[in-house]
Image 1 (cartoon, one colour):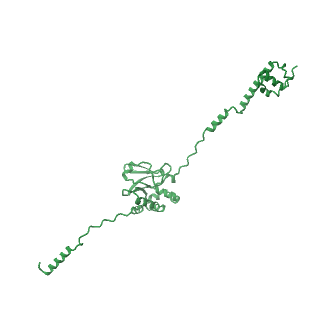
Image 2 (cartoon, rainbow, N blue to C red):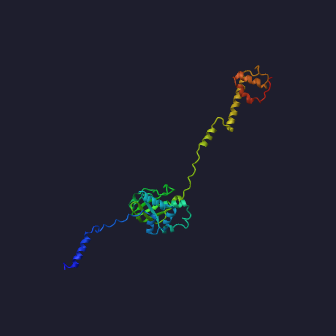
Image 3 (spheres, rainbow, N blue to C red):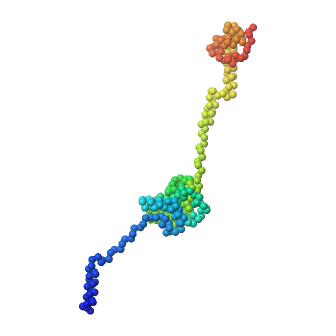
Length: 286
């Protein structure tokens, strides 16, 4: 049997096959590297995010995220509202927004850093989203935890994280039960009131009232009384110093002579106090 022509032929063929170079089995090919991270495809695969995907595309935010994830090492966290979340909004809410406001709405759901589910308990509030300023009245977003529940508030919306959609160490996507509405778009604050006027003007008026040049009736009356007192004193002085005998006085109606007598007898300048007295005629001395 072993010396039969058939057996010899079979042995020869097997020997040739095993000796032919290049016939050994090759290792299995490595799996193809994964493609670039695409947020919309991740959401499409998860389902129930149709409206949010449409907004991501129409506002151009989807392209921004694609560039950030594939051209840098920066992490991103997305809070994705489900379709039922948008259904709970008041009818016409999205259509009433301007293009800029729609962009802000979508960016408000994006945090420019990677937040794992274990980081929610130690996160610092308020979070800064890609919408911008996190100050009160603008785009504040605050996260708190209670046990395994993650609560999110925007100042307009209060909701919770209902599940994790995707996480790879650079991108984290979480589902939320409501659309996150930012204050600046849905609850704008009124402008700050103008500062109260200062009291400088009132103080100035008070200082002006204390000025010696004040022409108030009370001050004018006081001035007249003082002039009258000085005039009376000058008259007494002139009369005491030989009114009738003063050579410069020819007549009691002689005002010029009286003024000269006042300056002579009562001191230089005394005649100035006689101005108010000029219109009072005096009888000639007998």
